[in-house]
Length: 85
Image (cartoon, rainbow, N blue to C red; front, top):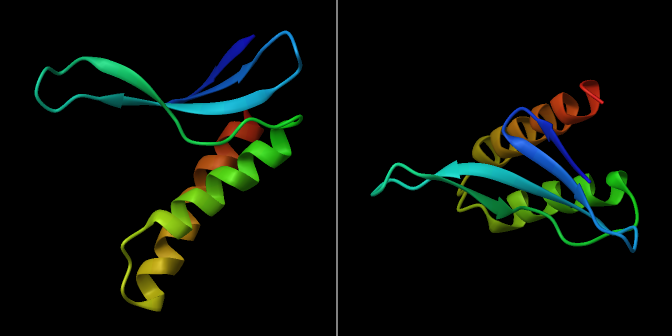
């Protein structure tokens, strides 16, 4: 199964694993591609939680304000994914 929610896809396989991918654009070629932004989980909630953790831990923020901005942006993306389900 593959459900598109804005620039994200919620994916699942026949074993019931769920993961989230994001549509990105290659700056050199201009072509769209998908990048996995969460691990493989048994439910959407866990995949969304992992997406949040990855963005926060992987960010290059220096100040608390920058970290809060990353968290807010990620939460807004997660809310948009859930709202459209």
